[in-house]
Amino acid sequence: MARLCLSALFVLLVGVSGCRILQRESTIKDASFSSLNWNDERRSRNDILTKYLAEHADAAFAFRFKPVGSDGVPAMLLGLLGEIAPESWSKSAASRAMGFTYEEKGSGQLPNELNLGPRFDGGPMVATFSCGSCHLGRVIDAEGHTMELVGAPNTQIDTTAYRYNLAKTLVEDRVNAAAIRSLLRQKPVGWFYGEGHEEAEARDRELILANPEGFLSAIRSSVNAREDLINRALGSHTYREAQHLLRGGVPGSLDAFGFTVLSLVVGPKLKSHQDTGLTSEDLAVLPSAPPMVDIMSVWRQSGKKYSQWDGTIENQFIRNIGAELGVIRDPSKVDRYNAELATTFISNLPSPTYPFAVDGVKATRGAQIYGNVCERCHANNAFVSIETLGVDPNRARGLNQGARIGLIAGLRDACGLANETRCQVSDNEVLLDRSSSLGYQAPSLSGIWARSPYLHNGSVPTLFHLLVPSTRPPEFVRGDLHFDQEKVGFIADARAVTGTKINTTWPGFSNIGHDNIEVFFGGINFEKDVNAREDLIEYLKTL
Image (cartoon, rainbow, N blue to C red; front, side, top):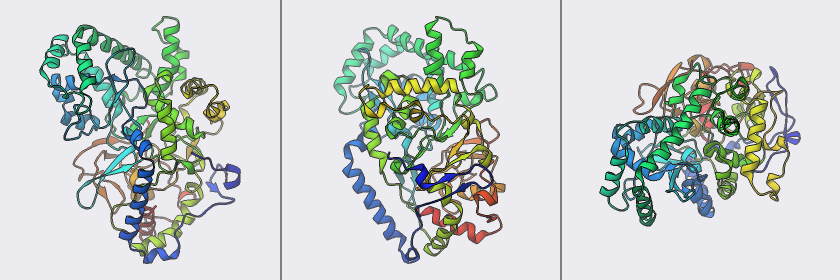
């Protein structure tokens, strides 16, 4: 992801002035936009995306299907749990609780979001995430069809609920060796892994049948040890005021790095001195409050100077190594080659085109408002202080120096080869030190329509609510795929048919900020100036 030259493009002044641009490249469409037929424009953009995906077919396949590493739970276990504990693990239950989706035919028992991963230490194949697990979004279009959005946030997946439900179910008495043995002998070949993986499935069946007691004991031991550490460390410190968040319930949302720091920094330290006790020094490395973030969109990365919401990673390759490490949490098990493919694929990946109608006249007027209001920060990926933004500070404040040092070490280990130029960079290029100036990056608004809900923590459901802060709801639904074309964002009110209600008073989910009329709205009161608001929103649909 090629970096922009910061000094050549802009200087950010932290304060009431917001972003002051010395030079910028306009993204506003020309005046002929008003005469364009949006259907033709949409068709043209979709053709460009289709061509891009075809030209990068191998990387696109890896993005969608290849695991980001070799760590995960035994893939066969998920099919077993679906039969033993169907109220939590059947396909319908897992869809509701964890946001998983399933193919109708031939895919076995794994959801689309989990893929067969490589064996580790001669054990059974594992199920783990691909890049697309979190970055293949969906929306229900005007014809009622579910449309895939490549590179968009998966607004339904709940990885925290997946972790929690797995740990909760495995301690139940009904999950036992006898049940495992019986199910493995009952199910036909191909039932677990699906078509094309019969040989691998047969091997894993025999491997587990040889010692189902040992298979279950090993899984329980690993999962229970992890959950015990999570509860004693994150539960008593980071999530002490929000224990329920450790059980999931916020689709499309993640802890930015608390679990990763726990795995990379605190966990190894405890193992090294054979002590399960946590000291104040151990806890001090962890974030003091939940550092919640929304899953980010990943298209057009070559135009981004910064990655991560707090703008800490500039190096394109290390960005993707970091994303994989956040999932796998073991540098030795990160798939470095897959990170290379992802770096290439998302570098110039086009953003998805708005699939509904657009009023060209309104959008043309809105383009001028965008240039005066939004462009100075968002067109240049500016970094803005939390004091200026006024938004929830948990994510920005969570990465202390102890955690940063540990993450740098983990990223270097995951990056791999000593002679790899992209890995031979300074600590600051691996993970920029933001400790003296906390804030968040202003991402490009390309494809902004597909990135609802808004702000770094997803606490504002639509663009309307973002522009009219007084209307931001304290509670709303996340995870529905129906789209609000007027307010621009996924349906988040009583009309929602799926999803989970969240509360913006929870730690990490505050919906305040980005609301100063002079700094962020160009002096326009979008609550009173309805025409300006509608024009700007109409233009934002076209980005």
